[in-house]
Picture (spheres, rainbow, N blue to C red):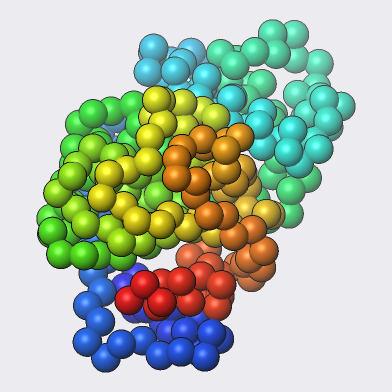
Length: 268
């Protein structure tokens, strides 16, 4: 994974006409295995796997998902009729606590949004939910990241769920010195996610914050602007990224762009 990130950044540097410093130290805290283990311990099924009424935790998960997919489907122009084509004549109420209704919305997004697959969207929402909902999960994941960081000035580049993790860490600690914070494909502008951090605040000891996204990346549904993520100083949004990965969300399709690499290298 470190090789993938570094290789993409090298491509971005080449596109910007600059070189990486020879003495650059790059660290990549990897929490994927720990997250997988936490997910297994919760035994929280993906929405497509739900067949019976679950416990209160599963109900909360459905509410969380329904809010996210409703915001996504509105942004993608998916109509009630397109969802009803999947939901059929099901007499059960069209409501967040009805897993079949949530399943129908997710399937409609998968069917009518080429860059999004059902499996990717469901897995992403489950991972984010468990991180946000469980203090134990946050402690484990945040701890893995913090082990690799110290008080030296460090440019932080975060992607996807990693932007949620790093925002949580940076807003809750003054021990880090972050002259530049770069978020790529960030879901922090999604209402169901950013509401968990209210009142929103700009992290202490963080210099400029740059947020880059492809407008077709449904994970980065909203820019981190004064409407979706109102903090001061304002976050600089770069919305002209053409992410070439299949789901418009992959890290390679962000870091290999000169618009992303140049601010990082300038800060170095």
